[in-house]
Length: 250
Image (cartoon, rainbow, N blue to C red; front, side):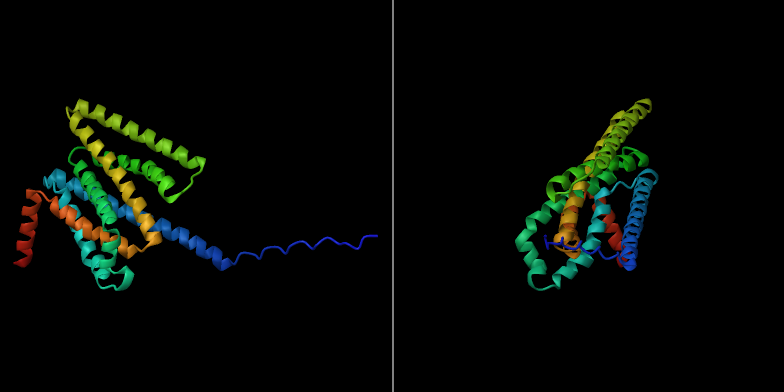
């Protein structure tokens, strides 16, 4: 007769706390709300850029970027300047200045190309073709951030690329009818290049924010973005900036 008895079954896992479920739901809602707010601001930037280009012939894409980077420099780079230790501005520049130089260059040129494209193509084309950054971002995340995706993600990318090709073809046909085919193609190419550079910037941003800090990313992009965009200001933009400074001083 055996006196062996099987071990008792493991206890069931504790039920999930209701507060934890509420926290997860709020986190998802917060992400959705912030994403929609960001889309609203981007849409406002697109509409105003198109309006300035068409109604007032104000074609200063680099100057518009220069203002944005200057504001980041004023706030976040100043915060880094007052830090001490390994997170100070000087230590960051000593360790990885060249990385932020390339990141700033990609971000500046992406902004320039997207705003410049409004001079050649329509607002609708710019907004739709800007989605080309999604497959580029997924490819970079796969190799750099080690992200993994499901089949539904790849199907969505295929639909996105199909839409990009359809939109470019429609722009070419519409441009030929209006004798503006070459200009429309230039605008579409600028959007595609800008979206690709945006993907590089966004992947770098995710890596830096998760592994370093948000303030460091914004501060260094503001610093190098201001320098690069300031060096690329054309004569028209410099005159426009000079007039603004004169009016502000008066």
